[in-house]
Length: 138
Image 1 (tube, rainbow, N blue to C red):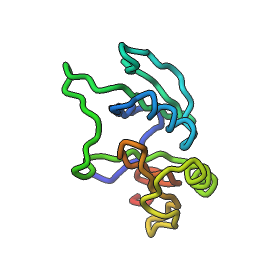
Image 2 (spheres, helix red, strand yellow):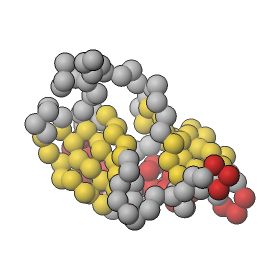
Image 3 (cartoon, rainbow, N blue to C red):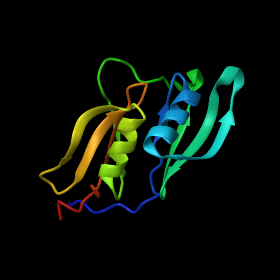
Image 4 (tube, rainbow, N blue to C red):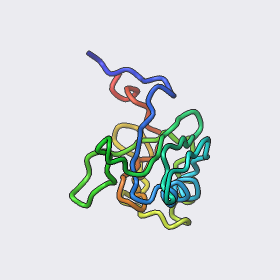
């Protein structure tokens, strides 16, 4: 079955961080997310949050033992989040200026996207670029 472009706003990645308040601050400052909602938990934790970037949303929380949600480990990468941005050059400049660890330099990809990869402070990897799912593979 051929790939199709997904509509925006249908998926909401949920990310767990050992220090969720610090992660939220970084995602806002370095990557341009906006806080929609932050539900504080006990002892400085975050029970639930919603951060938006244009018409997309991610949810961030502190670890939840009852759900077996843990913060990212150091054993490699099991997932990454891809975010469509209209101007990857400006986004890259902002992230770099705010100290984001760039793991793949800004570049034009063979499949038509322009973008870069960066890690957040707890090791989650993010791709920011012009890639739109399914567009290249039609």
